Amino acid sequence: MDALEVNDMAFIPAFPLMRRITKNGVHYINGVPVAESMFGQDPFEPVKFSRVDEIIASQTDKTGIKIYDAETDGDMIGIAGILGHDGLRLTAGCAGFAGVLALVLGFHGKAQEVPDMPSKLFMVCGSVNPVTRAQMDFARTHGFKYISLSVEQKLNPSWPGSIECEKFAADVMTEICGSHAILDANNPDEAEATSKYEKAHNLTIDDVRLNISRAVTGAAKAIIDNGLDARLICVGGDTLLALMNYVGIHELVPICEIETGVVLTSFAYNGKNYYIMTKSGGFGEEDLLLKLAIKK
Picture 1 (cartoon, rainbow, N blue to C red):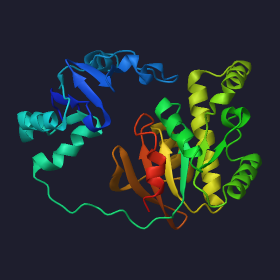
Picture 2 (picture 1 turned 90 degrees about the horizontal axis):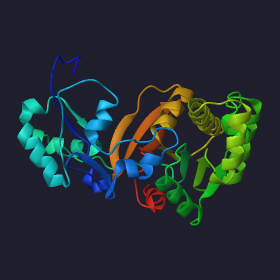
Picture 3 (picture 1 turned 180 degrees about the horizontal axis):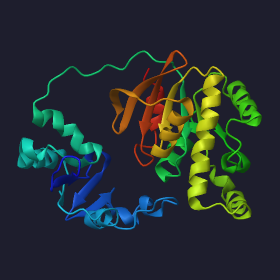
């Protein structure tokens, strides 16, 4: 708003296709007010309010942010019509509203096709969201290899990039042996041991979050450097940013939305093109990973 020197901005946080709606100013996830949903129990950034105006007020003193209710894609199109081209100059919210912009702005084009990609899927997960955990559990029961970091590996800031990390990557390459695989930083079976390590080393919640994202992506980089031939899927914004930092990549090329809420992009690293799918931890059905595994 400051950069564009405007006093008003439309904010449309709904994403009806993902069962995220806004009604009477309250944001709902699968019919539950957001602060009472799984997002209210996030260990790192719990959502404390369900009213969108209270969430925004807790983050900025800016006024002029106008919040719009929406329960359907039809509502989204209606909002765009109300705003008109001038009002659409600056909008914010979830990806749900972006989906109607091409229509209301009169853009026309050819849908991107899914390119030829490696047949195997390799997931890098730093999310603790229950939706993601259910997706991983479902994938594991359907043949995905599962590798988790130990407490020492994920919380010791010196582990990523170490000789031990390099050996871990080599062992993973042997273990997965061309299978679909998951690299997970948050094994729930180690919750108690994790808590003890945090207390013993006086780690703050921010320390834990940073160490975990660096550890899982540092391990992912080492695995890639060991010759991984797979499509990547990265879950969680912190994880994606940490991975990009580790491999020294500063841009992703968007290709298409391969599933609702899952975006396929590519990047170049060490002279090779890699495909990476990204999604929020709370997005997707239980069988999402299996659906993505057969898209090739």
